[in-house]
Length: 264
Image (cartoon, rainbow, N blue to C red):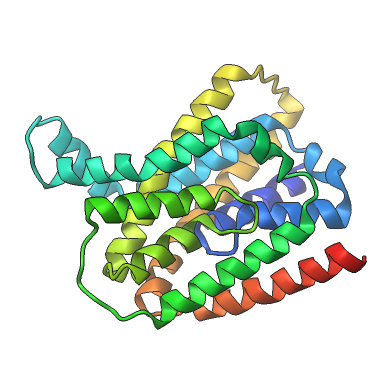
């Protein structure tokens, strides 16, 4: 893998991790168009590092909120930070269960299932459209809301369903304030990403040579910087009810994927 490939992968990861267009769906489309070997050339270490970069960009954007949450937890008191942390933990449970129990079955969904990706992108488009039409409220995230949003995140494991799109859309349709919905959506994924990174690092043996280190570094920096921009942009878009543009994009790409999968 060269430096240019590392740069491109980093930019794609940074954008698709936060914008509601499904990074897994786009990955499957690239596989179908250019062949699985293109993606196979990307090392597991690169994958882990790129996810680490976008997790880091989330932490930077929400550093104040994360600091308050950690500070409240270490006080060992029943306060607002503790309650919010419990809601984050609740939201993680469905995705963690699905990821562990159905790991083998999920792998088969990422084997050139281009038609499935197309239909799931249409689902994402529908969710984004409905979220944009939802009324703006000042409601916060309740415990029951956290579980429902967590279920949406678990469903978003399917290739083609955007994680951020599913969780933010579900939150907004539940009547949660748009800014709170975006904040909760991005914060709830950080522990899952870090946990997945730790699992991959502990269960795999990585060998990184001097030649392959530079693409990883370039990719990491690109994913981090792009992630900062995409995360900030997404917060503004949700607040201003501008998700319809992404709904149209996902709808068009979904239809193209279905047609290509059936007839190409």
